[in-house]
Image (tube, rainbow over all chains, first blue to last red; front, side):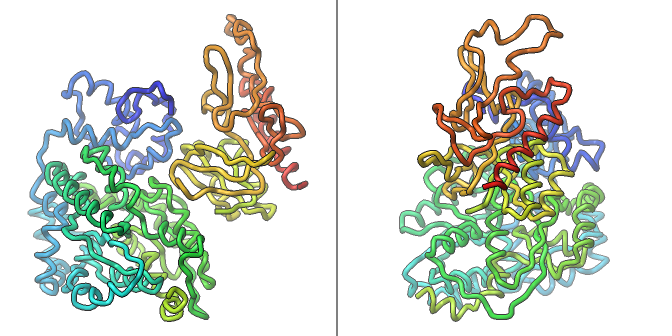
Length: 412
Length: 191
């Protein structure tokens, strides 16, 4: 990056090489989208003159950030596009978008009536009505809600035992582990405890806000971001590092807060750790001692989610998994699965979403793994729905492959 | 994190060398700023079991005596990447493997010795069709190793366009770049 560069998000460094266009999953499948170069740095030159040059086609951007990974000149292309949507987007979010994006409002509601909600969301008639009235595509398998949230389970079953551990961390569970898949949170607690680390919840944790950003609900996202940063600061003050499991939440907390929401996270930034990086570093330094189950075997394929690509930390997951003696791991080719959070749920995006995911689905069919490893919750929905192959989070794999009892005695 | 060879730069030279070394059984990692690499070479390297760090950038190197021990990257932060040997294939001016100021030409990553004409007026020829001297500026080597303050770094091998004398404007540039990558591979395998 040139030091003389003064433009926001480095956009004047764009050399028009078009590498970003070659990796854009949307451009290859949706002719209505102009692509990252035109929507990002090219359009920015016009938008700086006058906001009327804002083009509505920017809404087709998935914010997968593959263009940023590909850019040899360090232009923050996807950020430019999101910023333009925030600054100049003319449409206010639809009811459907608000419902999809408010993971933290819909979660408690849906969890309270989980059996009913899960049952109804699986019914053809309900899907038809949602498709027609809300524009949530009927062909999509909708995520299940858990009848007991992770937080509820934790307070009842695990919280009491945590203070006994000498080392302590604070766990940012996110909406997914809390409302949709508490087993992930339970696995996290099991693994951390086995390594001799106590888990604390973050007092007043809010949704990271990524879905709100994607759906144009900026004031709500900003409010949550401020609350989170303050809440994290209190945990850090107590001497606890923040450990996260979702790659997308992590990227949002680290990058989108300052870049897009203009929420200063500098006091907490270096204390936020993605769990795979946290464990990898702990094991390599000898601080954490894993004892693996004897005879545990698996043939898995790793799908690196887009936001993990952007963070550049996929290597921690693969190195961590390769420490497991019985693990035979294939790395899938780097492709977007097409769901992109709430994007693929929308009726107008369903077809493109599945087209984008096709190369990945074909790759999985070719490799024929027992299961796919992936850190991202929405990739899990998409891959399981589209290929029928189960998807496991690395943390859940560790919970399976570690001899938890022996690990606990080794880490006393 | 430890590798046998770390290749900085994922262009033609970097990927040619990386794939050859990985296929020869060495544990390799390529750090590529941007996806400058072609899908085919990327696939070949990954299939051979190589590690790709895409969209990341080396920010500094840790030297001891006449060796490069490890490199730090922008995204891996405090996790240093160690290796027995390193290949530097960051290209020339366009990819900023070599940078020209008004008064000097330098290698920005490690401050390696660069071969160039002191007199700026001789850097280029005003005739568009004439061969341009500045295109041949590049890092100096001794027995394939990079030089820093005149002394060789014994495990750092520049390859491709970053080398003095190789320029993409030459008609046989592709062959020359591949050959320089092969030379680096031979030098590393001999060790």
